Length: 542
Image (cartoon, helix red, strand yellow):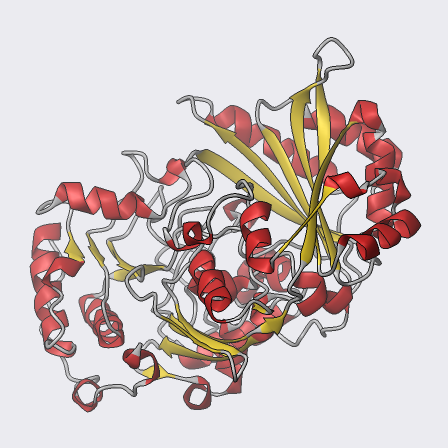
């Protein structure tokens, strides 16, 4: 953890602008040798790192294991998917600095991952149609966490998972938490760069709304904290998406108060159990409820027990309430009686127990589960898209939605409510703009296991997305950057992407904040070193 707060090594800073003879890569084995020599020259050699290099030619088994370790989407691990020439797992900050310098000198793309959950695989693969040589910097070994209970804060390194952060906070305090996502195996570094959404969002906002400092490696190889990088760059990395401005090393986060006892419930209702009527009412009140109450809705397809096991839509209401059952029932009976919530449906527990429960694990699961790095879901092939709802979908629209929804083998929709703190934070406070007036965020998902079924599922989710265009936000139709969707558009590979071209997808993610992000990017990374298919573009000077 000492490296988290230390300054850049004077030796490294003195050679940042030294030219290094580094011939262009011909085969991956030469890249590995040259990259290793370069890292040795530019970083602290007192920390041995010979075991931090993984090559498909020299240690293929270990290479494949590391490549697949945190990647969630099997679409981008298939044999035809472009693979990195090398994977480097830095052990200290100076290794990351050296990696930037060496990749820049070699003219090789860097792909950076802290958790590997990105939906389009851009942190560990390349453009399928015209791939360029690249190296993956995997931050999984930079996972230190230092909790300061008295200061209500913590420094967390980029490779630490949400689960590890939650566990270390609860280890020190039963009445402090952090408002990040449900998925406990997700790397905190990349998670916060896009916003970080979770069940405390209505009370405390996003994870990114609760960060106060950061450490990054910029395009010149310098380690910068908030004071050194300046407020514009700090603003840009705090919600502007990963991989555009530098390599995130660590966040300093504010911890938030949680009660010693919280209440959870998980109540399913099918269409035959008034599912349409209940969901229609949820749309009208989800963002207006007491800000201590978060009710997520999930749509799945199940076999109905009341109509000869015919497939039907099940709506499942999963909630976290920052208080005890009696007060929750009063709120529900007043604002949402249609769900018919009872005391028997509710369970009281500690906040850390609710983290485990809301991820679908049994309540008896020990908290140590959170530091074991286990994935919550089985890896699969999947495609996802997102929307933001600002007006309730009418019942006639829901009827059409159910029809399309049931046409897929494994459909899934997840709707996360807004309101509360999300309606109080200005759209320009961070690059994440989806704030006031939003009822909920919608995530669409489809998955498949059988080879050859990709087209069928992609066609379905795009048809569903097109149908929903009538009901969701417009001008622009908004999207969540942490649910990357390359259908929205991509940068030109190997060439400059104009502002107008990138705006097609950029304004969906960032709305008016996209313009400021482009200005910051042009200033701090004019050579566009940190590039990927949807990175913030550079605008050439006039």
